[in-house]
Amino acid sequence: MKSYKIAAIPGDGIGSEVISAGVEVLAALEKRMGSLRFEVTQFDWGSDYYKRHGEMMPADGLAQLKPFDAIYFGAVGAPDVPDHITLWGLRLPICQGFDQYANVRPTKILPGIRTPLKDVGAGDLDWVIVRENSEGEYSGNGGRTHRGMPEEVATEVSIFTRVGVERIMRYAFRLAQMRPRKRLTVVTKSNAQRFGMVLWDEIAAEVARDFPDVAWDKMLVDAMTVRMVLDPKSLDTIVATNLHADILSDLAGALAGSLGVAPTANIDPEGRFPSMFEPIHGSAFDITGKGIANPVATFWTAVQMLEHLGEVESSQRLMAAIEKACEAGIMTPDVGGTATTREVTEAVIQAIHGSNS
Ligand code: IPM
Ligand code: MG
Image (cartoon, rainbow, N blue to C red; front, side, top):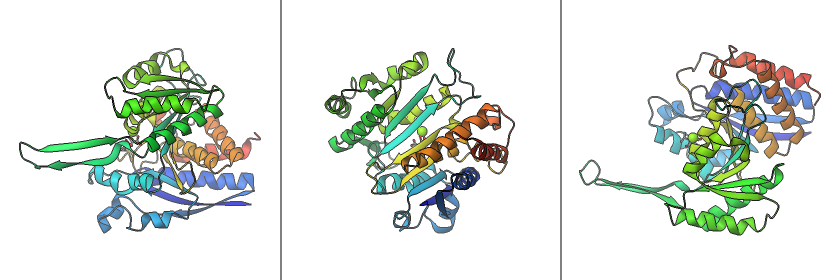
């Protein structure tokens, strides 16, 4: 029996609806597999916690999370708390404090979900975006002076280090190598940004020498948006900076039919700290409490969590169950269905128990 300690942080808005659905699905997998156990501990951190305590998580939050095998995260963001507080108070300190430098964002068109792309169907689009998750434009380096004065100045400094770029590049090449097509596209803006982005290009060429079986190419981020729309089948694994990959992954989500189904994994590839798994979508206060939040992204990120934990068989079983529910048309309104969160969850649980694959 393999047992894993999972820290669940549902956070704000629909976060608690989708995470509780995800925890039910993990329990169903436990039952089906017989050889797995998930010990889930809930943490009530987020905007409500902030309103009571003046902080998004306790000062020793990271120390509390450290002993866990993985973190299952819902969403943060509340209408009455500024976004930079919710973000820098909980999610980013976890990513940075646990050096989760690889942010991995798979994109596929799930069966039954319609893409806005012409002549492209399920199976045609199969990408993984690897987002640098520890530095770059999100370094948090900068400041403001002369606040409110006409001469006010703000800086937001992008930081690119050889260590930071090389480790994400190696991660991306390794991932590309493990995928059937062995193809990597390195995205920068090295025509206009001639320091950090040129460093990216140079390091990509250096690391590529260690991966002779990976076919790789370079794209400028603006041209990349065009290629994603006009020639999506030519792409497979993609690596980009923190901000570029943030933007490209929204585009990828839209091209795959919905951002509501897109998952993301914040990974410490060295396994020194727990990695964190979450849906890309936010807290969605407009539909909170209505029971119609789409739990698919949260289930799909559980697939990533199981893969990361080395539980390949159960990760494949869960992915197949998600696809089966989608194919049967059991989907929430955001992707054109009429099902509730509950109904989608039950369909996936049923598929977990039913399938023999
Ligand atoms: C994402 C999100 C976040 C980001 C927001 C909420 C700050 O858009 O995970 O892509 O940009 O990192
Ligand atoms: Mg984003």
